[in-house]
Image (cartoon, rainbow, N blue to C red; front, side, top):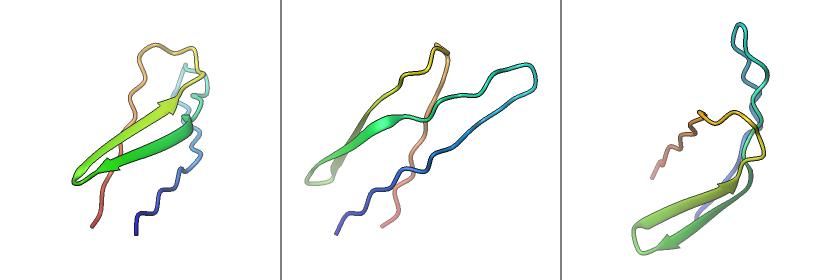
Length: 55
């Protein structure tokens, strides 16, 4: 069983605007290879997303 959830997060830093959450998150699994893909509609070019896998 693989359960995937996306938490809508709103991040605000001093002097910065709000950052948009990723949309249309998809997980593709082949054996033990997990590949995540998503759409990001924000305008900030230096944004990083992270994911955590728990077995």
